[in-house]
Length: 346
Image 1 (cartoon, one colour):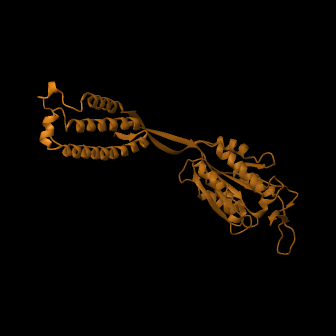
Image 2: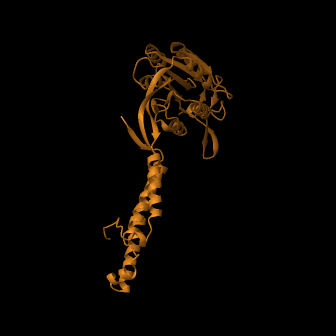
Image 3: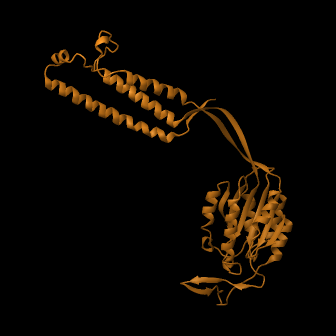
């Protein structure tokens, strides 16, 4: 199967100049004809100016248009493709489950837990090439923020909008995040799949261990990153420019603590690693190095076509048309006036 395309199709817009030139040429011809008529009878004028030709300028203009059109096509680089090549992309599928509950606003990891996690994810996305990535946010429930994709630019764009106010229900439902992530991978056997949970581990909503067991049965590896301090810190809120702390219904300042035990159990059940984040390193790079050791699977295949330039024939035509336009004179040659190549009248 032969495929045709222009490598530089933007140059085809230059063809819009041709109708303008045609209009200008017609206007000029009409003015010239009216000027001759004002001189007197056309038959008499023809005898007075035997070298005058009405057809040659038209022929020259047609050749000029044909030459210009051919040159524009040369610039657009017409190409034929005849060879189809299938290129397979191998990698792993990774879904990051990011905790966006209010406790992630604690500043024991500077500037705060959530911002630091988003910065680490952004740097990770910058280093991806063939792998697919997805993002789930969770608090009291889990929501898909970025479906599994290789569109890293869109992933970074959506990442910047993430915050606690995007979820209607507060809390920390790690189990819901694992369950949703397990359903979000590309269907099919033999694919390497991993979940990375980034949270402070204060699970209040469900049983994440049961969901981790179900994910492990499906061949999904679960890693966990604990972010925060185990001693406990208040959650700073910037309200009207004043630094205030989050309080519960009784007016007591809420203290958030990292629950490492639950995260360690989840990573053991999921066959992955647990890393405690610090202000200098979240641990994503270390976990992703382990993920890279997983078997690389075929994620997708893309059909590419090899194209060959076909502009040479149009370059030759342009040369022929333009040379012919130069050779043909506007007026008749007295020595060749008996040779009538152009018999039609305008």
